[in-house]
Length: 103
Image 1 (cartoon, one colour):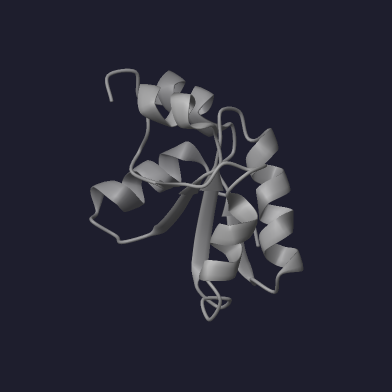
Image 2 (tube, helix red, strand yellow):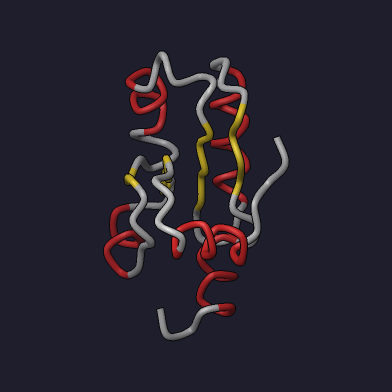
């Protein structure tokens, strides 16, 4: 599935959409700044999180990290587990902070 821009995600959140957001950064990064996603760090927690989401393979999942690299790997992990609507937040939290500096 096509990735999502920070502008599109920001608008969807502003519209009150309930989304499955997965933050694959490390806990200290999540504590410093987050947009409401569930923390599941790529290396240690994501495989367990993917298993816990069994039955949600047809739902939209949005993964994000600092720059979009780790979340791209997370997207592939979800897809390998049979998830069909996984989107990576392009540019990650760096792009978010650049686009929305006061948020």
